[in-house]
Length: 392
Image (cartoon, rainbow, N blue to C red; front, side, top):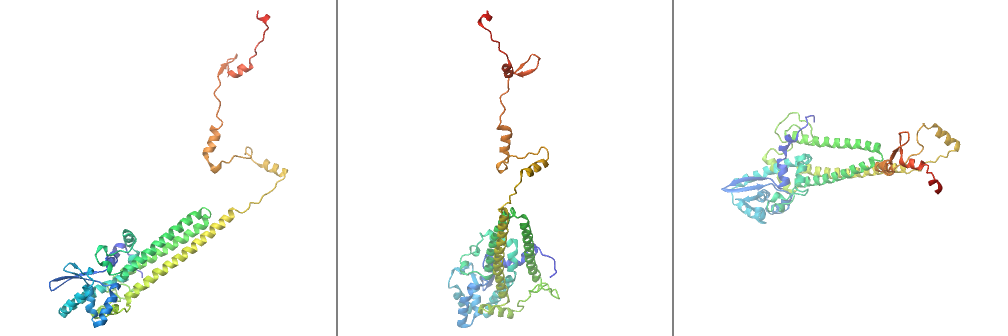
């Protein structure tokens, strides 16, 4: 696929149904029949088992599908009514066939939209907006954004896929944080070895970013009918067509019948394959993380072994020492004091404060007019001694 890279703004309209299936749990469409205002919803795996059992009784899978889809009746929330589907089915049997078929076409339309959303869920997972949405709801599965009874429907496969991806992505982010911290510690011991590892990490992240961009581009151009499901460019750009989806009501009804019966269609295989890829990719990331950590540990141990290796001692004779000292430049000290931890404060203390200068001495003028310390003058003064008779 040689089309230009797409932007988040271009792809955003593709995900409207995906976001609704993730956050609300189903798609909804309003309908008016004989003055009654209804809202039909898309069905999920949580609805299937009971529907299948009911359809086996009389073979009316289409009627039971419509009955299970009605969730609002004149504003009344039927999700809170455990026997609402059976009561709606009784009403449907009394309605004209054309009215039931009209409702059935709405359920088929919702089914089509869910199938289309299944194809876009992987691309949606890679969007920055998707990750922000996951963080904004507290990194946990959404529960119908407050619609009473929505939690009883169960998790649809699109929401389940999105939750599984984000949980795996959180785990990957934690592993990357541990990895970066380990590299930072080891870089102080073996900077060259860690630099090579960094280059591989940069390439690995670049490859993953490119792969995700290709997936998002594929979703966009697929929606325009320019590529098929494998990303191959079509000979005729049928803009607006839907690739590999039912084009007639009969084909769509057959797809839905197979879905109710539990037969996997192409859309189901898309989601199943992606789930397997999410799991497989995460397991591969864990394996690579363990290998990288082990390699980094080996580098650290090798470096430590070099640091603690015994230093060979060399003995010199007196003549050799004299020759070594003679070759030293004039004025170079033979020894110098090394301060612990290279503390400059200790050096400044020893240099300027430890040996405090004495108090300044008083000065006197000598006989020649110069200054000399008073103590020295006193020490050098000749004191004459006289006897008592001389004092007289």
